[in-house]
Image 1 (cartoon, rainbow, N blue to C red):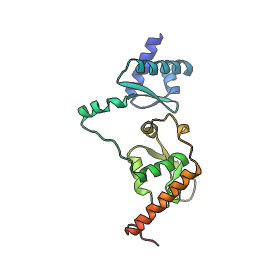
Image 2: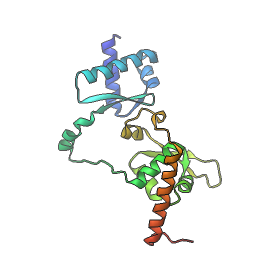
Image 3: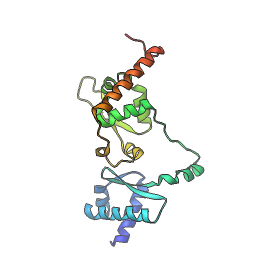
Image 4: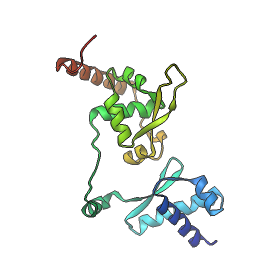
Length: 195
């Protein structure tokens, strides 16, 4: 199979799958080694950019996916009539960052860090597809562990969790202070009843 045909096959696979496909699976499907397939993917990435196409090829933690370029969204919205961009509130962002940095993590561990209940935030993040269940902790009650998803990587435009910014102690202290302020606001408004 020549390079052009190989690119066409890889493109067809990525288009049809509609989600990120691991390099190993792509290599097995086209019956070539991973290095060759990776070179083909890099060439495709470059070509899509040079040709100013409506789609681009992205890499997500060793997997590849065909996606619509963000600058095309406004045109898609006109045709699809379903502009659904999830809004991440401060509470959701804070909960998501705890999960991203501490994963896999249980609800109880998140609540210990935040100092407040996180049921609503965790449920919303699961609904948005930014986190998922990642097994169960080997402990009494076998609590659910949560971790980020590929959608999380796509949403924030990063290739892997290694690309997350490194948190310094000052940022951690800011998180704690914000959580404490949130608890005080909830107590003040009568939303939380102290024991």
